Image 1 (cartoon, rainbow, N blue to C red):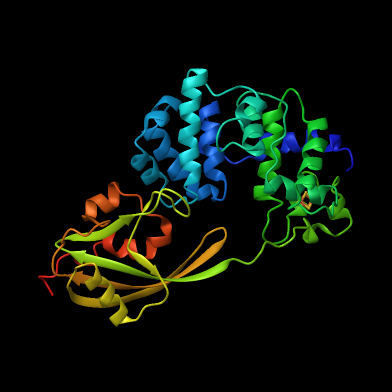
Image 2: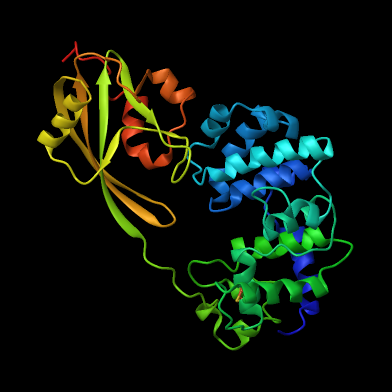
Length: 358
Ligand code: SF4
């Protein structure tokens, strides 16, 4: 891989002038950088802004995060997905309190030992918050460097990532490592993006970029496709009675571990199967409506959902089922966004939670 020393100054100069003002860039403490970097994984900047503000308000310090009730933590994470990120944040916060008195370690290696922190996040926190000259290489940076160097290395291959980290490690400026890393991320987010053609005319590296010079930037980076996701059909039951809705807790391990859900079952059920299922739970349906189909994409599986909304005679105790009122659904119980299409009408009060008024 070619020497990247020539990109440092133009890239940092461009960043100083052109970077976006983002809430987590206002005061770059280790805690704020860490939380924002974890939230930004797999999530758009615009979506993260609100979550970041609410999270920091609820848990302004490492100590507050370490002591947070899990349900409150997951509720604040609701909609961001990949809930293990939130759980790992808390585990790491507890370790930081126990071992380091509430102060995040100030070295790349120390950060890397914490749950949920990989090489990218460790590099980002170490360089941005502590001024350590270590690279922070994520998908954006892999794409930008592959284009600048016209590299055809497969970015899904860890060896390619390692080569890029090494090449950047040789040139990262000692006096502004955080600026350099953020500049690369910013270029990948705003000018040299993943979708559509890069804006080479507006790029501060236009004259230094081999991919652009050779006319191959659009073909890069090379990435071997992942295995196709498994498709799973599921039937969701929204059971309503006495102003409340039935939810149940998912197992502590596996997909959406420990979160709450509407009862749902594998397969695509017709009305009579749905009614039979409700009766099997000891509930007597009074009225039933089909709900719109929805889908949700997880990393390895895609749920294609259909569902039935059912008013039942009374909210009898059913093992494993909790009857939640509207406020509890809104404020207390974390339901993953996989169920958003079925939760939203309940929260927006489009759906009556009592049967009397029909
Ligand atoms: S010149 Fe074009 S391809 Fe090269 S880094 Fe800039 S935007 Fe990306």
